[in-house]
Length: 350
Image (cartoon, rainbow, N blue to C red; front, side):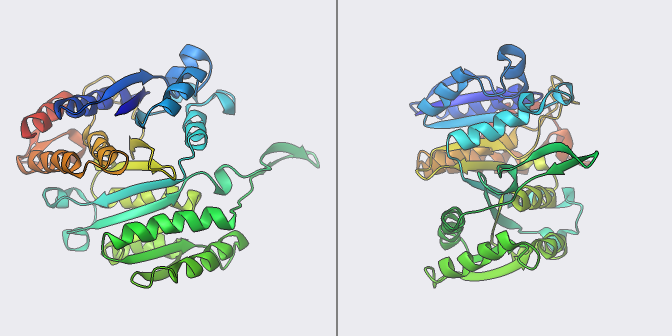
């Protein structure tokens, strides 16, 4: 199993180090090589996604990523910002399907800002299309028209792009509670009218899965009002970006949520849902559990090793049950630990 490790920026090196320790402890046949992506790559190679990283990522079976970004690169030209590296690697590897589970562990029910009875038992999977939509659409830019600055972006999807991400969602639902909610804005956007039309067509291929539709503004509201009504949610790139971050906070901390970005053959890039947290970088305070759980998703989806994936997930559950908490999920009566100590606890549970 060849894994390309991209530690990234901010807390990225700290959290990926703990995930690498966990993967190594499983005593599997794994080869890992480290490369640069994001701000660190800009500083070293003047490119957020250097050619050397491109070659290594393509040659690997899977990619483990920490996080990218930081305020020191915010004023760079757009093509020299860390986030461009993230968009480019997704496009370069054909990673069109982003899977973000939002699971509330019983021990963290009080960490959510919502009432425990609203979120207890929460288990949602958000499936986000990752390589199309307004983030990649052309034309785009900022120019001067009639004496004033004019910004524009283009939202578009092809029928085949919509169809393939919907099938990912329906296939996932078949392994869960057999419910798919497709999120769009068809009452305003023609692009998402097409999305709904194709969703209805694909839904007929899965008669055993219940398909519903929801406008994105209502979906955002329902995630806060009654989140447990959802099983699998599927939507486009921009809507999915927003809704998955909203769903992550239902669980109490975005520091707990992993993600997978897959191509058509389940080669994937695995990363925590949170950012680079530059304010705590280098202080040993970051929560590594989302990255460790991302490694579990890697074992499940790319390497089809369900046993190893469950070993990691069970170890995380045990650590939480034992009361270990990083600062983002700490509450009185639990034991506050740092990044390394949380990794030690997971290794001990393994």
